Length: 332
Ligand code: AMP
Ligand code: MG
Image (cartoon, rainbow, N blue to C red; front, side, top):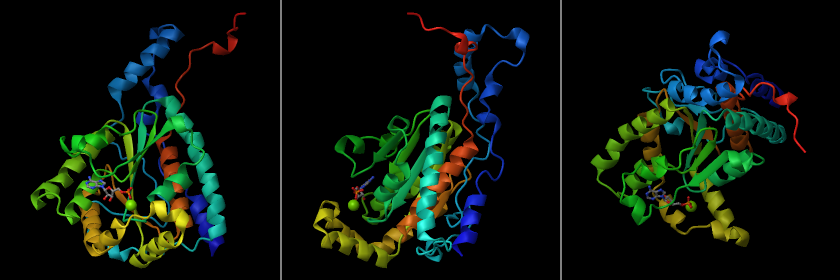
């Protein structure tokens, strides 16, 4: 019943402990009133204080994902084939489209607070097989978000310059700075996915990357970046239909890459590579989440909902402002 599930979906927001010590900006201000310097100096002092303490690296990351998304438990067995790409929690399409708009509104408001707080960031990693819906998700979920508050980085075949560096170099350069939401359209996981499937490096090289990726993500998490990693999970049949739709519609030809037909032949190898990456790199600081993605409206809603709930759990706060601003007069 859409209503029941709708309730479950609505009812969950704000569940669990929201604010962490790290999120409490006011905690960074000097506690003893007698020691406080004048208000304008306090504003200046607040930033280095936040720099020094940072978020607590041992704290559980404030990640909240929507019902219907499957989180890969760190260290537990996991079979990607057990996740039904058609799942939709019994939700109603029309309801989910309206709910998506509401979630976007929450993201917009919370993003403004994250930006004003200028202390932490959110990294959303999107991985999927070709036609899996990464571009569509970004379009649907980020519509209306202040463009100054988010960055989208799409990673293609590495350039010669990028290949002359360690494999994480190009990704590290694009992680969101404080106050920002960053989206990775493909990511550092390509280096254990397409690179493995196409045999671009020796097995020992890509295998060693799982640990390096975990260390990289731990560094980000300890530096104040909450990481939401989504695999958009579609079925092989759904991919065929999407490829056929691109071939049938001249307006979609620009999107059609004949190489996708070749890659499709490696479907099973990609599924195995996805599954291993989820198992090896689902950690307590950055777990993997599998999104049933055959139904675009379900995918968009649950991802938007997860981003909104996670931002809410991060509980970004406006910084303490200089006292007396409201009494100031603008000179002629
Ligand atoms: P698209 O996202 O469809 O525009 O295509 C980007 C292409 O770049 C895909 O075929 C990816 O497999 C490929 N790609 C992305 N990252 C890497 C990487 N690290 N090594 C090799 N190929 C990559
Ligand atoms: Mg493509």
